[in-house]
Structures are given as structure tokens and as C-alpha cells.
Length: 316
Image (cartoon, rainbow, N blue to C red; front, side, top):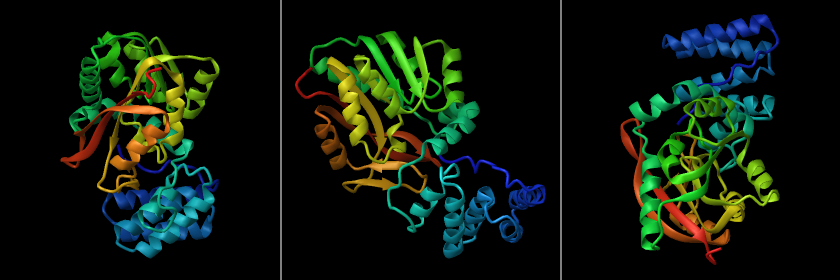
């Protein structure tokens, strides 16, 4: 999934807000130069108007003026310390900021709350997303090699979204728990009725709470979640601490030919195979399976991905 557009945060000035909306209408009609002119006037009058700065950066980038785009995105970032709009990611994409910036919680919550209403349809109709099915097949194969059945007393779905993985894994789970940052996503998952417990929250805080409660899970899933996490070391270490004896972790990522982590033009992270192997080992986990797969498509082209299954190094 890519960004669906900037969150509108008012400048606090009615005239500036109207100018911004007029610029958006010009851009919608294809008049990007006119939109840029109006937005330039807007930010001159309201220099702290982060939404207008971000829109100006996006339009300057579309017009091929990288330097002007960088200037606008830097101004947007300065006016938006929580990075609701994703200006820091845009700067990194343009080679003008930290190479692999972490995505902020406000940015991710806004992104997914905006997208929740059309999420399922977009995954199926446009992205041909098949992450949960690939995870099911990978886990089934890994367990068969170990002589184990496909049943889990407790299953944790990290970044559960609208519950697509829950639908696939519900038949194999005695108890199914889901957590997601976006309340709108959780609301849709709740309506499907597959989960025994759903929590709105970020992964790190949720896992910390589960560790404190000594909660244990036989299977932890992360389907298309780690593409929004730049550094997996901490989250994998936390997951290892909530795995039950003989527990299993299964997740998907997008990948690239390098060894580390890369920010893609889609503003998602791609993790190299060597990086993943090291991160899994560093968390005290043993890699049980690693398979290359096209988990989704982007503009009609398959996206390079990996499906991974891991377990506790000492078997629990």
C-alpha cells in the first residue's frame, strides 16, 4: 500500500485554507504549474502550514524540480514534527535526508485509518495480495517437516489490519488475538468476528505488555507488516519472548538484492536476505523456512518478497 494523500491539517487561517483547496482542485485538473503557484503564495502567507508545504513538495517533485521539492518537504517536516504527512520519508526517497528513517506512529495511523474503507477491495482487485495464503502454506510445510500438526492453542496476528490473515488461520487457532495501530482497521476486523481479542495499539507497546503478563503464543503472524518497520531487531527480539515452547513466527517482507534495508519508491521498506538471517539469529530464533514469492503486485508488476518461518533456537 502506498500513501493516499496528505492529511489536511488547517493552517488556522481561512483564506490560506481556501487557497490550499483551490490548489488541490487545479492539480486534480492537471494544472500542476498553476497549483504550485497558488501553493507558493499560500505558504508565503502561512509559513507554518505543513499540509500546503507537503502538497507543494509533491507537485514540485511531479514537475521534475527536485531541489524545489526538497525545500518544500524540509519546510513541511519542520512544521510537522510528528511527520503526519510523511515528509521525512519523501526527503529520504529524494536522497536529501536520513537514508532509512523510521515511520512515525501518527503517520502510520493516519495512513491506515484513511485506507481502511477500501483496504480489502484494493488488496484483492488491484494488488492481488496473497500474503496470508502464502504464510499458511509455509507454516504447514515447516510443521510437516517437523512432524507437527497445523493447530495452535493461541495465535497472535501482529498488524492484523482488517483481519485477512485471521480469516485464513482461524480454523487452526484455539484463540486468536489481533493488534493494529489503526482503530478503523480494527473496527472492520471486529465486524468479521474471527478474533477472540482485538487491540488498538503499536506493536512495541503491545508486545511489551504481553511480555509483562508472561503471555505466550504458539504462532505469531506478521503479514505485510514489517514493510513499515525499518529495523526489525527489537520487534523480533520481543516476539521471541512471547513465543511458547515450540512456538513459531511466520512473516512476509518485501526484499531487494542488497544486504541491508532499503526505502522503496513506494515508501515501504525492503529487507535483504542477509539482514533477515542475521536479525532472526540475533533474536534467538532459528530460521525454519525462507521462500521467495510475489506476495503482491504494484502497477501490474510482481513485487519481490520473502516468506519466512522461524522458531525458538533452543526449541523453547
